[in-house]
Image (cartoon, rainbow, N blue to C red):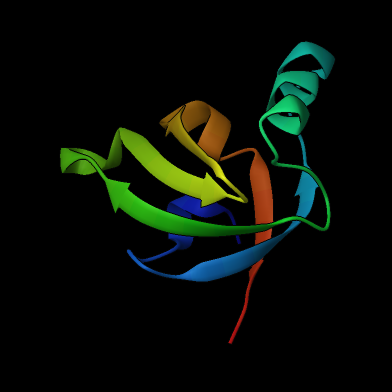
Length: 75
C-alpha cells in the first residue's frame, strides 16, 4: 500500500521509501522515513498532489513521489 491508496484523514506508518537517494534524503529531512507516522490531510482533484502531515511538517507530494512511499494503515 502507498500514499496513493490512503483516504483523506487516514493515519499511517511509513514502511519504506522506494525513491532515488536524493529524493529519499529530501523526504527524510521533511520527516518522512521508515517508522515515521503521517496523516493524509488532502488530495487534489484527480489525485495529482497529496498533502500529508509528518510530525510538525506539512508536505505536498506529487503523484510519482507519493507512489514511492510504502505505508501501513494504522488503526
